[in-house]
Length: 108
Length: 193
Image (cartoon, rainbow over all chains, first blue to last red; front, side, top):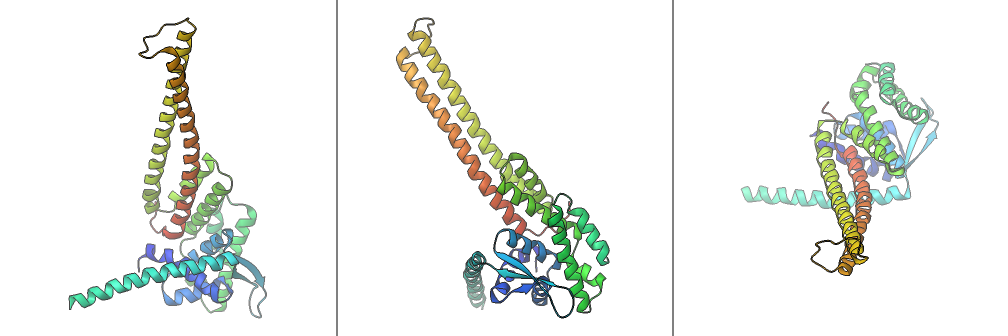
């Protein structure tokens, strides 16, 4: 998929994942890169932007194995932004899917 | 590329950020390497998936400078933010430079109009006044009191123009910041300059 196209939806994917539960950076990268190919390094600048915009907060938590992990958690504002983004995306993708479907039927 | 090399290149490209910021960012990537290694990936493999550390650094720099320009508005601040965003890639250059020229052009035209109105108004008021007290006789097609009043009116329009310019500049500044943020969030800086 086009790189320009993916970067724009990355933010929404991260927020959708965080809306479910708090996650650490590597986990987010892993969850997303399992579904579609991303340049993994771009998640961290994105997380930092969300942090400075006040959409997420972070906390460190020790883990049994390996280093302490930095967890990201959606704030109140973050939840609001997430819901808006997801709604916009749903409207948009429904419209596009509807159009493609209609045109596929029309071709036959 | 190995972990140390990646972190070193990233650190070099973060010059200009505060030490605290820099250390936090480097710690995020160090944690990423440690987690990846725990999951059985090689450092080479992790680096490849992360991408170019220099373009990652540029992205941090651009969003930090935009944030700074937003919090402490200044011409120099927005200039640095624009340059940093443009530096992200060829595509950014095109889609940032064109609106930038339009903004500068708009503000320039507005400023010229406000300045001309202000000057014309002042000159007309001056001529009318001098004629009124009899020092000076002009060829104005209107009576001197009318010239004074119309002159004052035009001067006020000029002042109003300056206020509009100020208001417009503030509005465009805010919109510009939002546009730069959108740029950084959406445009993938894969093309190198």
